[in-house]
Length: 87
Picture 1 (tube, one colour):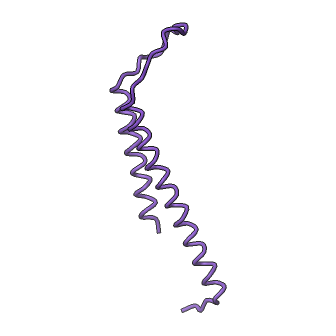
Picture 2: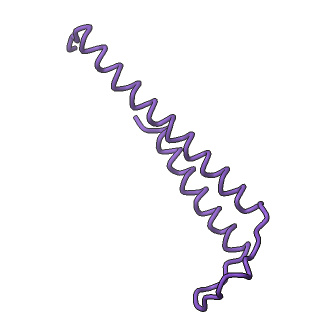
Picture 3: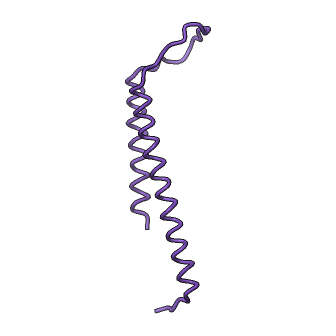
């Protein structure tokens, strides 16, 4: 077994805790993003009829928003799982 000096133990502990702190911040950020998306979907929207109409593109309805939410939520949860299980 290899003996480590106190300095090496401190450096090792710092690296571990620094990575854990970064992961915790990333998880918080992902959870906030999920809440923001959910809030966006449930909030009221208005159409500005005063602007010039632009042709093209596909109209986006609530179904598209829900699908986008579900896809992003799955992706964020997968990232959270990877951060929690990272060794």
